[in-house]
Length: 375
Image (cartoon, rainbow, N blue to C red; front, side, top):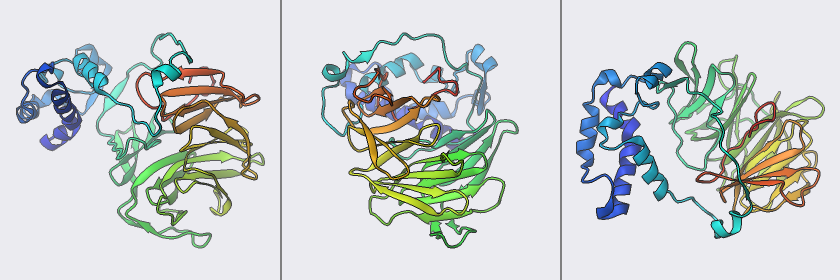
């Protein structure tokens, strides 16, 4: 690991320290810390202790799971984390008193054992997320295959051979193999979201770009801009099977639209418009219902055949960004900037079944385990 890579990995910590020092003034817990001196101290740290990977054995021997040399930071991880959490302010679009409005509603959940056990950490798989509201920029299809975005590059990381392979370069002029059906070249694409299903990788961009790649083939099979609207960001993508068994792609954009494409020729099959920017669309297990969430407190349950709402979920106090369906299709989970996740029985949407309070900030991504036991 060279000096520049080390600086890149630790820059966010140093910036956070500086912010905490300024916020706390003379009462800051770190004492007089010179940022340049601290950075130089870290860069000169024993290179043998800055290996790009961290194993279980390394952690047992005292190494930090992220490989951060806290002993050179003049304070421990726990102290840094405590101060960072105290200074954290959750972003809100709407004004509300969280403590008064939500605290009594939230179900008390006891913490049990860890869901995951630490196995391995690597810095070889690089990732960059340019905006805090972007989601689904990391996607794992197996325990060995991970898809990530780093700068303008969409990459595949294999944990088996420890190799990262570029699949799409957003800086290039992307020329699709397939012509017609609305296909067009795109370039200078800044990735905002993605989805992967079997052999198909789909990627969205800040200006309404949609890029589709079949993983077993070279090149890009389809690309386009789904809208020319100024507020065009592609917020979410989901690949699913409709009730007839055909594979479809549903695309949600900031232009208040949801679009459905087939995944053979990428024809636009349906285009539905809603009263607000659409941040998320999730599809129930049998492909008969959409959960549509966006820049509004309420969410909609929609019939994908006609785009008409057949139900509404009411209870969140801010915009919503994520949802997920239980494998049995009867329970819908929604996540909001009001820092809560709500569970709904799709057979009776009059009120939520439960309200789960987040530990700190907005709920921007929700998934059920495949057996439905965990959320």
